[in-house]
Image 1: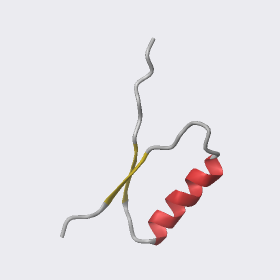
Image 2 (image 1 turned 90 degrees about the horizontal axis):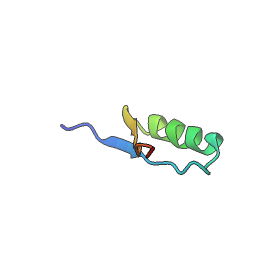
Image 3 (image 1 turned 180 degrees about the horizontal axis):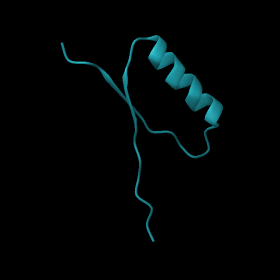
Amino acid sequence: NPQPELHLNADRKVAYEKVAQVLSAAQAGGLTKIGFVTVPLHR
């Protein structure tokens, strides 16, 4: 069975506490493959 993945793309305005709550809920739900979507900074 393929393992479900969570790709989190949080806006920089989102408080870290909210991101931590999402991560905690995902882990409590059995998700183990959790990653962050990033966008390269333009110089």
